[in-house]
Image 1 (cartoon, rainbow, N blue to C red):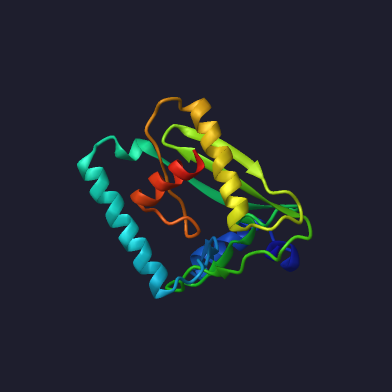
Image 2: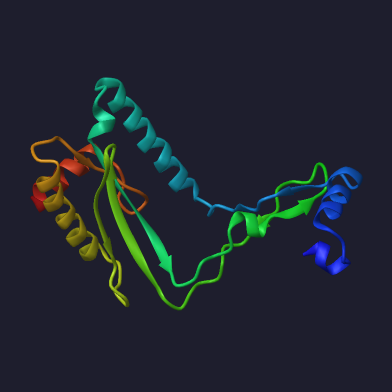
Length: 177
Protein backbone atom coordinates (compact mmCIF):
# COMPACT_ATOMS: atom_id res chain seq x y z
CA UNK A 1 0.00 0.00 0.00
CA UNK A 2 2.79 2.46 0.89
CA UNK A 3 4.88 1.28 -2.05
CA UNK A 4 2.00 1.86 -4.46
CA UNK A 5 1.18 5.33 -3.14
CA UNK A 6 4.85 6.41 -3.36
CA UNK A 7 5.45 4.55 -6.64
CA UNK A 8 8.38 2.64 -5.06
CA UNK A 9 9.29 -1.01 -4.86
CA UNK A 10 8.13 -3.01 -1.83
CA UNK A 11 11.77 -3.87 -1.04
CA UNK A 12 12.83 -0.21 -0.98
CA UNK A 13 9.92 0.72 1.30
CA UNK A 14 10.77 -2.18 3.60
CA UNK A 15 14.44 -1.12 3.83
CA UNK A 16 13.54 2.52 4.57
CA UNK A 17 10.98 1.50 7.21
CA UNK A 18 13.17 -1.08 9.00
CA UNK A 19 16.72 0.25 8.63
CA UNK A 20 16.34 4.02 8.27
CA UNK A 21 13.22 4.65 10.38
CA UNK A 22 13.78 1.65 12.73
CA UNK A 23 10.14 0.62 12.49
CA UNK A 24 8.80 -2.91 12.66
CA UNK A 25 5.49 -4.38 11.62
CA UNK A 26 3.35 -5.76 14.45
CA UNK A 27 -0.04 -7.42 14.29
CA UNK A 28 -2.85 -5.80 16.27
CA UNK A 29 -3.83 -7.41 19.57
CA UNK A 30 -7.51 -7.72 20.44
CA UNK A 31 -8.43 -6.01 23.70
CA UNK A 32 -10.19 -8.48 26.02
CA UNK A 33 -13.41 -7.52 27.71
CA UNK A 34 -13.13 -6.06 31.18
CA UNK A 35 -14.04 -8.33 34.09
CA UNK A 36 -15.67 -7.10 37.29
CA UNK A 37 -13.97 -7.75 40.62
CA UNK A 38 -16.63 -10.37 41.39
CA UNK A 39 -15.95 -12.17 38.07
CA UNK A 40 -12.20 -12.15 38.75
CA UNK A 41 -12.72 -13.55 42.27
CA UNK A 42 -15.03 -16.25 40.86
CA UNK A 43 -12.39 -17.28 38.31
CA UNK A 44 -9.74 -17.49 41.02
CA UNK A 45 -11.99 -19.60 43.28
CA UNK A 46 -12.94 -21.91 40.39
CA UNK A 47 -9.27 -22.30 39.42
CA UNK A 48 -8.31 -23.12 43.00
CA UNK A 49 -11.07 -25.78 43.13
CA UNK A 50 -9.79 -27.33 39.90
CA UNK A 51 -6.18 -27.35 41.13
CA UNK A 52 -7.22 -28.99 44.42
CA UNK A 53 -9.26 -31.64 42.60
CA UNK A 54 -6.37 -32.34 40.19
CA UNK A 55 -3.98 -32.70 43.13
CA UNK A 56 -6.31 -35.27 44.73
CA UNK A 57 -6.86 -37.30 41.56
CA UNK A 58 -4.29 -37.37 38.72
CA UNK A 59 -7.02 -38.40 36.23
CA UNK A 60 -9.37 -35.59 37.25
CA UNK A 61 -8.61 -33.33 34.28
CA UNK A 62 -9.53 -36.15 31.89
CA UNK A 63 -13.04 -36.24 33.42
CA UNK A 64 -13.93 -32.62 32.72
CA UNK A 65 -16.31 -31.71 29.93
CA UNK A 66 -16.48 -28.04 29.09
CA UNK A 67 -18.14 -25.92 26.47
CA UNK A 68 -17.76 -22.74 24.55
CA UNK A 69 -19.90 -20.63 22.30
CA UNK A 70 -18.81 -18.65 19.30
CA UNK A 71 -20.56 -16.29 16.92
CA UNK A 72 -20.46 -17.44 13.31
CA UNK A 73 -20.67 -14.40 11.05
CA UNK A 74 -21.54 -14.02 7.39
CA UNK A 75 -18.28 -12.29 6.43
CA UNK A 76 -14.59 -13.02 6.91
CA UNK A 77 -13.03 -10.50 9.31
CA UNK A 78 -9.62 -9.00 8.60
CA UNK A 79 -6.73 -11.33 9.50
CA UNK A 80 -3.86 -10.32 11.79
CA UNK A 81 -1.56 -10.10 8.77
CA UNK A 82 -3.99 -7.82 6.98
CA UNK A 83 -4.29 -5.52 10.01
CA UNK A 84 -0.57 -5.26 10.84
CA UNK A 85 0.93 -1.76 10.94
CA UNK A 86 4.39 -0.20 10.95
CA UNK A 87 5.38 1.05 14.43
CA UNK A 88 8.30 3.02 15.85
CA UNK A 89 10.77 1.45 18.30
CA UNK A 90 9.45 1.43 21.85
CA UNK A 91 5.86 1.81 20.73
CA UNK A 92 3.49 -0.96 21.76
CA UNK A 93 1.39 -3.23 19.66
CA UNK A 94 -1.45 -1.40 17.86
CA UNK A 95 -4.96 -1.98 19.23
CA UNK A 96 -7.73 -3.18 16.99
CA UNK A 97 -11.42 -2.96 17.75
CA UNK A 98 -13.35 -6.08 16.90
CA UNK A 99 -15.10 -5.98 13.54
CA UNK A 100 -18.62 -4.60 13.41
CA UNK A 101 -21.48 -7.02 13.75
CA UNK A 102 -22.72 -8.88 10.71
CA UNK A 103 -26.41 -8.85 9.82
CA UNK A 104 -26.43 -12.64 9.50
CA UNK A 105 -25.00 -14.54 12.42
CA UNK A 106 -25.64 -17.61 14.52
CA UNK A 107 -24.13 -19.08 17.67
CA UNK A 108 -22.16 -22.32 17.58
CA UNK A 109 -22.12 -24.24 20.88
CA UNK A 110 -19.33 -26.80 21.24
CA UNK A 111 -18.69 -29.18 24.15
CA UNK A 112 -15.46 -31.14 24.46
CA UNK A 113 -13.23 -33.08 26.83
CA UNK A 114 -9.55 -34.01 26.82
CA UNK A 115 -10.09 -36.32 23.83
CA UNK A 116 -12.00 -33.94 21.59
CA UNK A 117 -15.43 -32.66 20.63
CA UNK A 118 -18.38 -34.52 22.12
CA UNK A 119 -21.33 -32.40 21.00
CA UNK A 120 -21.99 -29.29 18.95
CA UNK A 121 -25.03 -27.44 17.73
CA UNK A 122 -25.99 -24.17 16.11
CA UNK A 123 -28.50 -21.86 17.72
CA UNK A 124 -31.46 -21.33 15.41
CA UNK A 125 -31.84 -17.82 13.95
CA UNK A 126 -33.89 -15.43 16.12
CA UNK A 127 -33.67 -17.81 19.10
CA UNK A 128 -33.00 -16.43 22.56
CA UNK A 129 -30.45 -17.96 24.92
CA UNK A 130 -32.20 -18.54 28.24
CA UNK A 131 -31.76 -20.83 31.21
CA UNK A 132 -34.40 -23.17 29.73
CA UNK A 133 -32.53 -23.21 26.41
CA UNK A 134 -29.23 -24.13 28.15
CA UNK A 135 -31.01 -26.81 30.19
CA UNK A 136 -32.21 -28.40 26.92
CA UNK A 137 -28.72 -28.12 25.42
CA UNK A 138 -27.14 -29.75 28.49
CA UNK A 139 -29.77 -32.49 28.39
CA UNK A 140 -28.80 -33.24 24.75
CA UNK A 141 -25.12 -33.10 25.75
CA UNK A 142 -25.63 -35.65 28.53
CA UNK A 143 -27.60 -37.90 26.17
CA UNK A 144 -24.76 -37.69 23.64
CA UNK A 145 -22.17 -38.34 26.36
CA UNK A 146 -23.97 -41.49 27.41
CA UNK A 147 -23.69 -42.73 23.82
CA UNK A 148 -20.12 -41.52 23.17
CA UNK A 149 -18.44 -41.87 26.56
CA UNK A 150 -20.39 -44.82 27.93
CA UNK A 151 -19.80 -45.67 31.62
CA UNK A 152 -17.20 -42.96 32.18
CA UNK A 153 -17.14 -40.52 35.08
CA UNK A 154 -17.61 -36.96 34.01
CA UNK A 155 -18.20 -33.48 35.30
CA UNK A 156 -19.82 -30.64 33.46
CA UNK A 157 -18.10 -27.28 33.87
CA UNK A 158 -18.03 -24.19 31.75
CA UNK A 159 -17.64 -20.48 31.41
CA UNK A 160 -19.27 -17.50 33.13
CA UNK A 161 -22.83 -18.70 32.52
CA UNK A 162 -22.22 -22.16 34.00
CA UNK A 163 -19.96 -21.77 37.05
CA UNK A 164 -17.80 -24.74 37.96
CA UNK A 165 -18.77 -26.34 41.24
CA UNK A 166 -18.39 -30.05 41.86
CA UNK A 167 -21.63 -30.23 43.86
CA UNK A 168 -23.48 -28.31 41.16
CA UNK A 169 -22.29 -30.59 38.37
CA UNK A 170 -23.37 -33.75 40.19
CA UNK A 171 -26.76 -32.15 41.00
CA UNK A 172 -27.11 -31.27 37.34
CA UNK A 173 -26.62 -34.90 36.36
CA UNK A 174 -29.21 -36.05 38.91
CA UNK A 175 -31.78 -33.44 37.80
CA UNK A 176 -31.36 -33.95 34.06
CA UNK A 177 -30.49 -37.62 34.09
